[in-house]
Length: 195
Ligand code: SAH
Ligand code: MG
Image 1 (tube, rainbow, N blue to C red):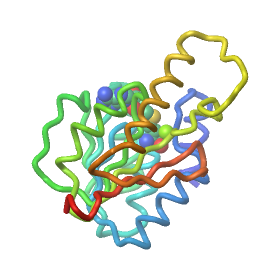
Image 2 (cartoon, rainbow, N blue to C red; image 1 turned 90 degrees about the horizontal axis):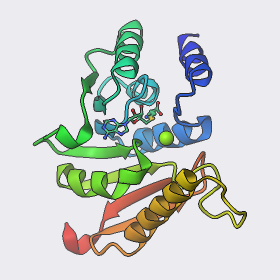
Image 3 (cartoon, helix red, strand yellow; image 1 turned 45 degrees about the horizontal axis):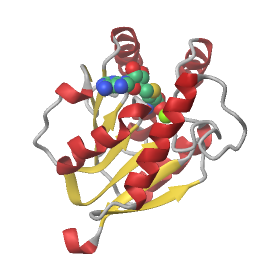
Image 4 (cartoon, rainbow, N blue to C red; image 1 turned 45 degrees about the vertical axis):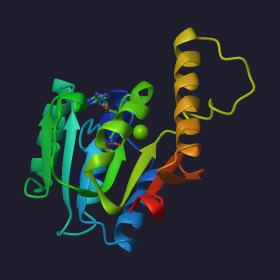
């Protein structure tokens, strides 16, 4: 099946597509909550966008990827799956993307060091009853690990993810539930007083 080819390509080229468990959880959420309008930050080669679009034909996804090569691969994959009508993919930096529409679900799956910034930038595009879903909250088990983390870069990233977790936990406007699924998924909803 073509989806398996995409999974293989990702594996061989070190592209961090969503883990099986995580993508199943996300697509199940979309199905159960009748989500139709989705914004994704970080398309990579289109895998998660394709999976979400396949939930049903009413779903429409806007997704953004800054890397040219990955974007081009995503475009090919979306065409091959005949999902061009459902998936609108843009080759640009998410910070240069200005949208006026409101979305039922905003999926943040891009540069982990920028999670707070993505959240702050795109929360205005969230529908009243919408949710912001964030992937890789556990960062391969390193976020809660007590073992000494060797690389300076990895340490910095873990610090950033921890800062994001604190930001979500202490957020006045949003209530977040953390799930130990895949590489860690968070679902944030607007608190009632802010609706
Ligand atoms: N959602 C994909 C995986 C995304 S991997 C899936 O599960 O199939 C994260 C991607 O985010 C990378 O391809 C990276 O190039 C992209 N990215 C990181 N920061 C970005 C930014 N500021 N704007 C756009 N894309 C970004
Ligand atoms: Mg991810």
